[in-house]
Image 1 (tube, rainbow, N blue to C red):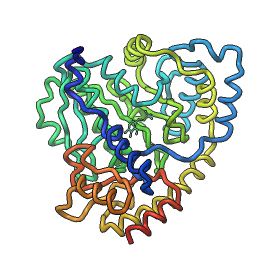
Image 2: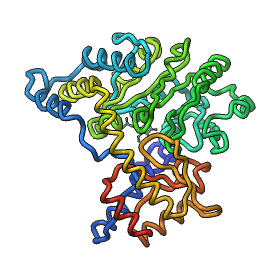
Image 3: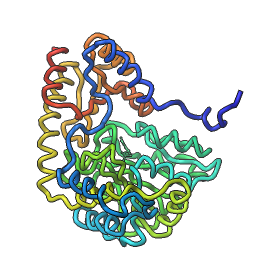
Length: 381
Ligand SMILES: Cc1ncc(COP(=O)(O)O)c(C=O)c1O
């Protein structure tokens, strides 16, 4: 018997990897399943992006290994994008590192900064990968709770009460997934001050800034943030390019160099054509965002209707690709979604996969057409 590494005992197979097997089994056995679980954009990327990758295929250097740091033009395009949309100045040479998705960055950053036994502040509820990667590298998750009563923002008084002596890294994610909460005016300033006070590296994971959000913000816009903060971003949701795997990490050159040390030993540069497509995406005009969000607005109206029909409540000011909805009191999320899957053939994500503070909540994805959402409403009304 060849045993798996001990670290595998610290994590379980990703919830969606397991649950989607069950959902796919139902589909192959003929059930008309509506999947409102996962946030995988079903809309097309901009046409010029697809054209650029097609052209990229024919370039003479397309099939070679590419630079670990990405094409200089891609780094320039990322720096320009941050300047234009977030008013953040970045050196394209030293402060920008393209990645194959921001999920990859969570592992790279953890490998670059965490020793066994270090502690990591992780939001509850929060994206499950923060916790699993922390465990895979032998560090210890320390959860900080987000609460509806505090608009799902960190409670700094509670944070100061925690034993922070071993904390080296803190994950934050605003606009927030799964709750859709936006940062208030002071949040990023408070976080930078907190990071400096306790010598903690804060990473803002920022892939949802452009979905149903009027005011995209970056933690790097705060003065002095680069010393203690990094930001992850991604083209997955902003440009419907989730399968292309294009993300980025941004911050001070000393941090970027540390991450590059990990990345260059683990993978190679992104496919040439994908980088050319990403450059085109980053240059999209305001019209792209307006058009994209007009589709999501219609879908969100329908999801609100669906949530009403299921007797859920939700915050109409929330942003992002999901609707985070509260179940009637004392209804348990997992039992509830299992019953909706069985009786109505609709798959919705239970809030508990994001942590104990997700109990009593469910998350609807906006990655389904109006027709599909109307059919879902019909089934529950
Ligand atoms: C909060 C959060 N961070 C990161 C990711 C990963 O995105 P990607 O790796 O596609 O850039 C996701 C994807 O669902 C997410 O919800």
